[in-house]
Image (tube, rainbow, N blue to C red; front, side):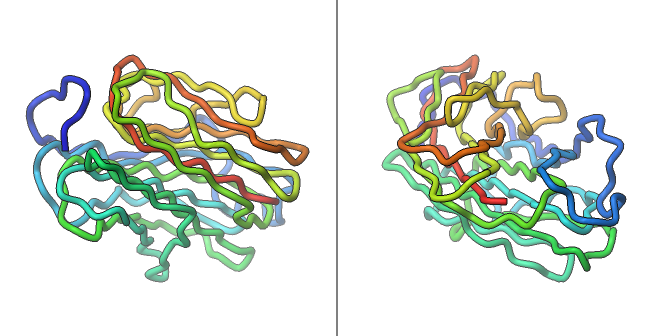
Amino acid sequence: MIWKSVVLAGALLLTGKQDMGSSLTGGALGSAPTSPTFLRYTYVSNTGSTYSTSVTTPAMSIGPNELLIAFCGAGQNTAATVPATASYNSASFSIVSAVGSSFGNAAQMNYLFLGASTPVTMSTFTCTPSASSGWQSMVVLEFLSPQAALNTYSNSNDSSGVSSFASGAFTTTAAPTINIFCVNGNVGVVSAGEMAGASSALAGVDQPSLTDSAFAACEWNTSPTSVSSSTGAMTGSNSTSYTAILGAFSY
């Protein structure tokens, strides 16, 4: 797999979690919320050229009425599937979509909804590509949310080397939705764009800070009404090949 931008040498593996300043803790509200609230993210920094069979985040607090999004990226010598699991109850995430590319860059978005009976506990998260791979990254987003179900998704990729990253067009069949757009590539410092005609907020990257140079990044927003042939967008400080997935979830 050849990145269309300069990659720093080395294979330092960084893992961590970032609380985005919310005082909410999983399960703290006691009853189901009426709209989504972003809580925090955890991550595994890009592994570089070192091959491995999986990557695992540090433990993060989870609880009832939560939507978890695990975005898994992989590069060298990888098949196009990168499923995710949680250590809590050995739970397997459901797949939103997987996207491969002719330039060897794969990504998969996965989701898991934790119902009202979920205890407040700690969990790690693991991405496992279907073939041992280098250039792995992982971002897990945690939302306090009403019951959420996958509405639709879209995939995109570009091998030409660009700094503007676009989703495929998507159309939702119900509303409201929480929309999540994630990009895998040597994207650099990322700025949120928009989805469904509304501004998005950057939610997580595969680094300790949202202002760090990244290989994986995710943004989110909500749509109060159904949308037709809409798109999502982000920009980065690097020009790079990329794969991307957008998922829309009804709540």
